[in-house]
Length: 241
Ligand code: F6R
Picture 1 (cartoon, protein in one colour):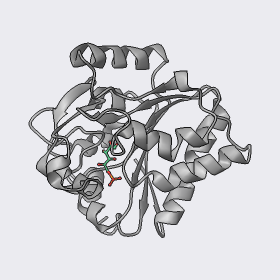
Picture 2 (cartoon, protein in one colour):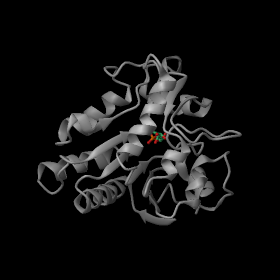
Picture 3 (spheres, helix red, strand yellow):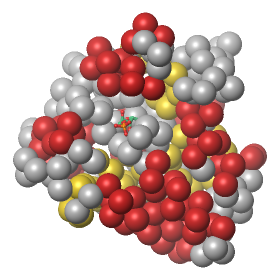
Picture 4 (cartoon, helix red, strand yellow):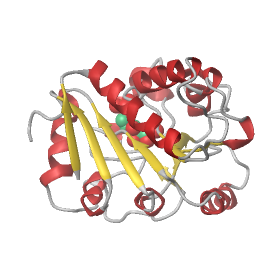
């Protein structure tokens, strides 16, 4: 694992954007695995700027998002479809047909999950997977538990995740209880992984990820086994290392 510690969220966002930009400059048809949540917002803002300035061209890029809530239509302001359009896709020249986001409202969700994994494989696999991390060590929505799943699947969200994400909703009751997420196999097969973490609330999960046991109780700890995983952390997230 390569660990880069920066001063604050602004520096984290700038470094992360450079990392993604470098990937797209190296390979114009790069396949990017994308995350939502508050952590990558600053990175997306900078990528949009780099695209506007002509430094990074997204016209050949293919994207696969990690996850989506079940039961929220893409037009819902808290859906990850809406988030991605709002924070990135509306501001860069990515082709709509190259964008993939799990359909949390698919009629046949099992078939959808299979097709999502097939689409990732058909695109040649993920070149660079961006990850955030939950306070409980989840990546994507692969929640701590006795077992982890390899492929895209439906998951019951952990109580900590519902509580953490309730800040985006009017009340905790409105947070969907289930989500569709890429599995650990899809994440671990990515050629490179970039995990971002900011703030004190992530410090314990980061400590377990970097120096704890590799365990299904901390899904991010599996990144210790990946050959090309980089963590960009601000000082607070790195404070227990
Ligand atoms: C989002 C995702 C989640 C988040 C994590 C951290 O697509 O997969 O694992 O990355 O919950 O969320 P924030 O960044 O809001 O703290």
